[in-house]
Image (cartoon, rainbow, N blue to C red; front, side, top):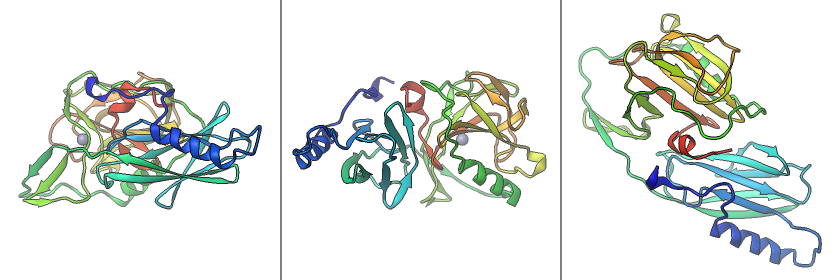
Length: 293
Ligand SMILES: [Zn+2]
């Protein structure tokens, strides 16, 4: 984690200080109003990071809005503040990103610099039999799961590693297939190299909202468990051997949910843990080592 030290939730970016200063100048006449305050974390986000946009307004009963590239992100209230998560991935363009915040009848456009990051590249040669394509049932169930945004917040503090073994493939690697760069591919999670039967635990508390089985048509994901951590934050645990939970089960952080296998599109036993935020697979590493709340 040493190279990824991040500010805590108390940190305030330069951009933000500028934004507050600007907003304060705008309404210098208003005496009691503290106006629209926006905090952006982390200070120096990079591709794959989850950006927290924390908004404080004069009237906490009126929800502000957060928009990036014409997309609105859900805000959730905690104490007197609202927070939205803006996910980023290796498919984003690095450079300036504008976060538009509206509240208190004001609009604040905040420039956030998204740092580039190089991801390792794998060259894959496909020959012979291709793996079985996903079934419609699998596509429908997984896409419905990824859209879940439940208002409750179930996770608390840093997420746990879902398996005790070493990481075999990190987040975000890009691929060439038969010498052709796969523009839309990136590794949407972290792989753990455990043997068959190695325990898999919930990285955080939540509700099991997806249980899929290879023999029911989950040809790509294999035996899979999806956990809703709330507020658009979801974990997907793939290629399992055994599944020890059912849909609807509430799980605690660290609770056993199944074991490592090699079901679905997998060539050997391993766990794939994908962390989705508002439908985008983000880098789970900051979530492991920092408390993103
Ligand atoms: Zn994987």
